[in-house]
Length: 356
Image (tube, rainbow, N blue to C red):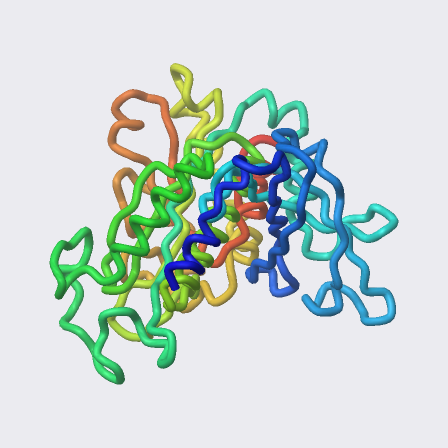
């Protein structure tokens, strides 16, 4: 095994200018991540200078077998924390050979919204709190839970410390450092209310970069859990009963909200979000009705509400924002399995472009 480890950790820069680029894309389910690697002749820092690449879309449920070629367009580059050196991870989206975005390419539509002059002028910032649950590989039961049984009730696990309260910290810390190495603007991590559940935060990020960075952070986490022999799930309610679900709370502000008097812009934005509540809920992740019950720090899925410092509301405005009269708000409705391209662009569209 030591020789295998040595080979995996070979420093290519000592013998060649060639690098390895791992192309990453979203599969046919809209949540599964796929990747494959190719050799490039020299380091690349601009995604526009990377070659497009094809793959077999019939094997990812993205194309029929008799016309299976799908084309990857490189969109964002990150440093590769696994191969290191000059090697890179490349976030891609997918197109037909004719250049049309394939169904499910939500990045394409998000990019159109973020490139709209009115949206670009507002410089939308996002901070996404990505919750997830770690499962034991063979039994698909949360890490640290007795097989077929339950731990003690919630209370000691949130931000908890100790072998009987915190399960999977090595994975979480490895992911934290790997994201920083990759160039993802990961801003923190913490243990969550349900044992075996964790959260990482990415942001502030601007516009389309929010989606790119969350997807790549998810990919890196999938790779680390693969190495650790642990299963990762973004299910919004992995365990039924008196256990917290998993969300992806999305913190948001525009330039107008961050300026003096921004609280009035925030209130208008929240009013718009309330008027489009059903449309947002429909786009905020599958299985969210199991999570948004009005319990466990959630609002009921059928009722829109907002409040200051209220974690039982659809939208939470922070005390500091209220006090300073400007700042940001938190949309608490998105599920942990949401598509960040959809959620971030939809919030921008509703709060900036949409006219009631």
